[in-house]
Structures are given as C-alpha cells and as structure tokens.
Image (cartoon, rainbow, N blue to C red; front, side, top):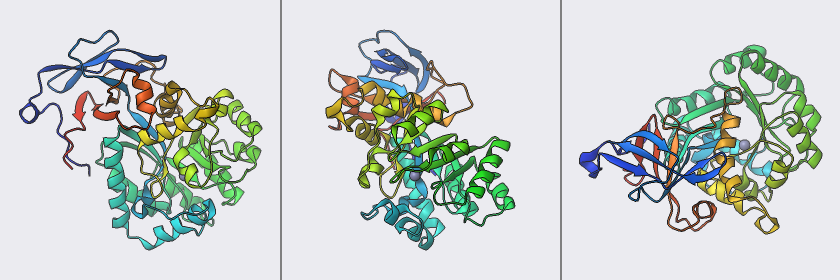
Length: 378
Ligand SMILES: [Zn+2]
C-alpha cells in the first residue's frame, strides 16, 4: 500500500497549466545534455533533447533510480546497533535474532515505509535479498503487489538442510535465490540452487568478500548473475569478475557502518559493471540520493568518482543488473520511468552528488504520468 500522491493530472488541486515543461537538462548515457519533458494535463508527452523553453523548471531529468541491493525485511529494526559484520548481520547475529522475534505485520509495516521512502526519493525498482524462506518471500510479496515500485524478490532457503523440493517451491514464488555468502552455506546446496535458477531462468546472486576475502574461483563456478560487496576482494578477484562479466553491487553507506569501503574507481577501471544498493534497511534507509552522495565522496581526495559516474551507478548501471537478459535502454523516452530533480546552482550534477541537500526530487514520471513529490500527502 502506497501513500497518496497528488498527480499533476489533478489541475483542480494544483492549478497546473495544461502544458508545461519539466527540466533544463537530461542525464543521458553520454552525459548531461540540454533537454526537458513536455507534459500536458499531467501526462508526459515527449522527451525533448534540445534547449528547453524559458518557462521550463530548473531540473535534471534522469532515468528513475535502481536500488540494486536491499533487505527491506529488516526495516522494522532501524536503527541497528553498532557492531561488526558478524555481530550485526552474520548467522545468529542481531539481525537474525530481530527477524526471529518480530511479527510478520511488524515486518510488513517496515517494508511499506521503505517503499514509500524509495518512491519519494526517485527509486522505482529494487532488488531485494529476502531471508526466512517461503514465509519471508510471501511477506514481501504482500507489500509489493500493489506498490508502484517494481521489486525483484530473491529468496533464501530457510536453512542449510533445505531439500530439492524446498528449493523448487521457493523458486516458484520469487524471482530467484540470493545467499548471505559462500562461507555460510554448504557448497552442494549452493550448486543445486544455482543450477535450479539457471534451469528456471531465475536470478542467482550472492554477497561475496564483504569483511574477509573468499575464494573467487569457487564463487564464480556458481555462475552468479551478480555479486554484492567485494570490499575485501583483491584486484585479481575483481579482474576475474570483469572477465566473467559478473556485475558487482556496492553499498558504500552500509560498508561504512562496518568500517569497510568499496574501491569503486578500481572496479570501474577494471571494467566491471558496478551498481549501487542501500543494503540492510535496519542500517541505512533505502534512499539512493544518499547512496550516490556517499559513493561520490568516497576517496574524493584521491580522484574518486566523477559526478557523471556516481549518478550512472544508480541509473544506467543499475538497469544492467536489474535486466541482465534484456536489452538495456540506451535512449530515454517518456515511456521509461523518469525522475525529475530540482536544482538551484550552475553545476547541476555537482549539486546532485554533493551533500548540501539543495537538489531534491520534485516528480517521478511513470507510465507516462507525472507524479509530484512536493505535494506528497502521506
Ligand atoms: Zn546485503
């Protein structure tokens, strides 16, 4: 269940002009170019890549954000206490004790709040690693079914003794399987899970080398569709992922909470497809603007990421992870999910990735409809 948004197609509420122009710039795969969205009565009619008319809003139009790694199931436990990866999210750690003691309704309530926050901050798709077997998957499905955000729900068996039938039943209820790490699970179960995902054309993914380095050869033999973290991986490990064209999702804010840090410039230099995720919702709210800013500020003194690359991670690169088997959109149109971000200064991308908070999401365009955030009425 989402909150109530007043669409721009409600002129009686908002005094919206029949025709309006949104944006001064469009964020394309080649960079920021002059452009805007022309809309009429709240319906986006055309994406124009040309100098906008003077009345157009001072905004950037981008593909809506993809949050490539979430655990919305633990949003109810926000904020989590401080501790190591093992103490907080490892097997038997704080997170799993919290999940075991919470009711499904508490979990659903946290997930709904996360979906609302994602929508208001310009995210229209996410990939979730859902714990707790079939029950966990069904709990998340309950809240995504009528949401405006598209969720790729990846389940995890309830325990290491899961049978083939258990795996098959789980896969039948979600978009694939995702595991905590190769170190936490019996290898034969992971091999079965990977094989089954391939057979049923589902996604198979893993966290890997988060706080300690894991055997990349063994991980890649499982043929993952993507890996998450790789903060403790060596440069050779990253190169092996690039060689196998396995994307890596990084989560700078979550890593920071554990004293870790992804080397995003190195990942990009080695040719890896890198996307951004917000990880455990009990640690970081699923706000991609904050994640972009964290990625941008990482290692800024050593050159770091360009403003363009920081935003690309959350948009075009996120779509590569989201749709590994589908054509990647290279040319935007009003039929794509778009986000409109208002800016004030002269350097819009720098403003978007900097931390002063002046750039803010003013509208999301979905199914051709302009939906404004500034009139959010939760
Ligand atoms: Zn995670």
